[in-house]
Length: 327
Image (cartoon, rainbow, N blue to C red; front, side, top):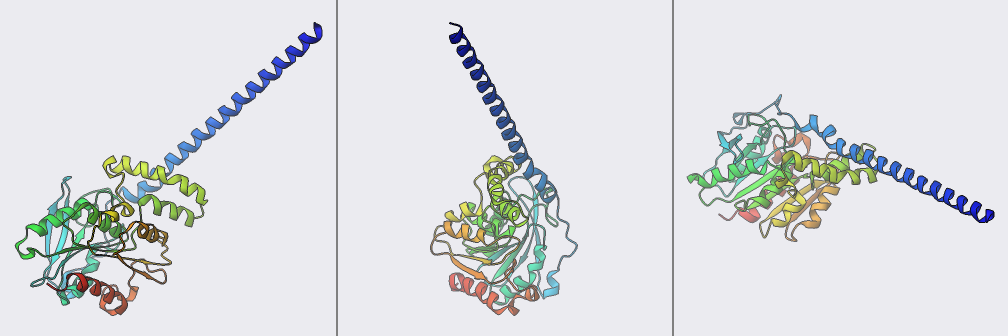
């Protein structure tokens, strides 16, 4: 009996130690998970706050007169109550009107007056839109493409109501964040007839993760971080924007013509973003991948006078003439 008692006590002691070890292990794991979740949740607002909670006041802007143009400044109210500014560059009997959208922090969309001049010389009108939180437009938060389509919508509605643009096709043209806004806009606004997008990110959480890796973060950590970036963006901009991203919106293109461009060594919006969009876009979409790190696609020396970059200007004008030149 004594032997049996000793064995039983030893067994109970071993079981108690084992259970205690399991509880300690689970507690440690739970604490680690909570710490990890806290860190992952904290990263997006910490990184993004100084990047988006701002109004972009440009040090350098451009006037249409510098390009031999006349532009009408128009002020528009968006459906969420902001006033945004656009510059209307008209041409008699326009083949189409092209809405220009610039990047997240630079340059001012007025830098595209050179493009507007090239288009005017070829029979196309332009409307240069300074989206919310940029230049003379209202707003103190850059919405990363989640809300700027509302700015484009206000301009599209203005164009549609204008007698001088009666039955004139509308094409949206954007670069970088503007490229993302352009894709989101054509997805959300059926009245837009065509798309030209340069260096767009496939989704904000995608380019966020891509740049974390470029800065030395482990790829697995960047991948794990993406859902937290998307969740924070939804909290910041409203859950109605949760599924708004270029790689989703491009699927709504239908049979409308589109030209998507990216440079293969883009250091700001990595080429993987183009590939993600390409996976989702309809087969008829035209693409151009340019060699080098050319975030604005055009060679820098020709930005203000784009016709000097012959390959670039021919891509733009060729696309427009192919789909809108027979008016």
